[in-house]
Image 1: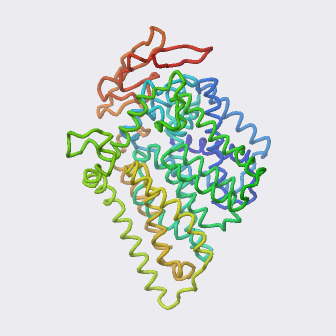
Image 2: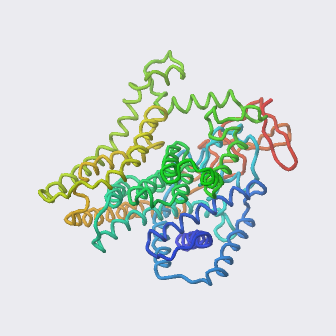
Amino acid sequence: MDIFIFSVLTNFIYFCSGSLFISDKKYDYHSQFYVYFIGVIIISFFSIILNFVTPLTPLINSFVYCVIIVAFIIKKKFILKKKNLSFLLISSFITFLLIIFSTVNRPDAGLYHLPYTAIINENKIIFGLSNIHFRFGHVSILQYLSAINNNYLFLENGISIPLASIISFFFIYFFYDIWKVIKEKNIINLGNFFSLFIVIYIAFKITRYSEFGNDAVAHLCFFYLIHYLLKNKIKKINLNKILYISVFAFINKSTLGIVFIAPVVIFFFKYGLKIKKTFHLLFCFPALILYLWLLKNIIVSGCAIYPMKITCVEKLPWTNVKEIINISTLSEAWSKAWPDRTIQNISMEEFNQDFNWLNTWSKKHLKHILNIIIPFMVVLLIITILIKIKTKNIATKNNQVLDNRIFLPLIISGSGFFAFFLIFPLYRYGYSYIITLISLLFILTIKDRISIKKNLVIFKFVFVICCFVVITKQGIKIFNNYKNPAWPNIYTLDPSGNIYTKTKISINDKFIYYLGDKGDSLCMYSRSPCTTYPVKKNIVYKKKYTYKMLTIN
């Protein structure tokens, strides 16, 4: 029961935060979603700002949440409409179902998600932190959102809630889009069909908390961006909203940087090269969030986007250029199935070039990708065939507006797909590109039948089946694990539940860090900073004013 109560309170905080920054007179679930979405972004933003000057301790976090609630009560006089309350309760129930009897993401949660969250809770920003563990150079904004949810009421269990909360908001957004079509029997548009296909994918692959990691939120955010583009004419698109979505997707997953094609194209389409408008774009609030995130990255790793050498400031004393190049090469090679290579006498650099990796990659990663997308494509193919059969001889005239709306999403997803394939072809790095491109191509095959009302039958059937699948999966999880602890175990992945003591090590006899070298060899949520690798001997600790710095000797 405490999971549900804490989920309600966490989601309510997001609602309060969003309500303070945007005023929306509409109360449908799409509008409600945007309030929560902005609330999440605002709290994330202030989490980073606070961590520049202080650790996000339970005291600080409790104070921040109290300020948000008091400000909301003063501004809104604690008025909650019926739709406000229903969205809050439904999203909280979904959050509860996703969390209860689940495990954390393996092994990334133990390697760097939870350890970085612990660092934020115990330390203000550390210069050169990636020199302890390279994965600290490419964390997600989710680690900050998790860290600020550790307060005197939720305690450390609170860090498990934000991930499930955000996923629940996206669930409601896409399922509601289908429900709205069914209930109101409106003319079906491109966005509705895209939602239909995304809901199918959600029911198929995005239902397990333990598999979300830092990826699911970013990819769902990409789906949200595409849906918004399909739903609106370019002239009516809110550029600020596109920027919020793009920035949030990027600061969750840097491999989704292709999203910035959307705001750039829309800006030039609407405003051209007007200096005043360009100035406003460069200094709008979403852009400031992006700059703050890039600054945080430079402080932590020396690179705006780690480990892209071109984005690194090499003159900084904590920038380890040699290690950055090595990690960049290593990351690309592993995404291309380097450990499974058949040619042993080849360097990583050679492996990454000239498609030397293609044969090895196709035997492992391609099989994994096909195992996921072929069933998805089969379902979409069946739906497409049914639509063509049911609407035979009643296809509407090709709509030029539909063509225009789908053009930009096709460019974005297509560009993302090729970047994914050529640079980082690991499914979880770019599956939203693949799923979006497949969905749009299937939509193109029925573009002259989109708005026909006979399609409502398919919407009803898919909605019921997908709801059933999602609920059934959660029910099976609860039934199989009801004897386990209700909360995800953030302290160990050991099957026996043992929590292993970390080895305490010092740098220069002044800076203490912990090494996860026993049992499961993972740091999890423990004393910080913690790493799974011994820190190299050329790392030197310095202190500048009140800030800790890990520099290169």
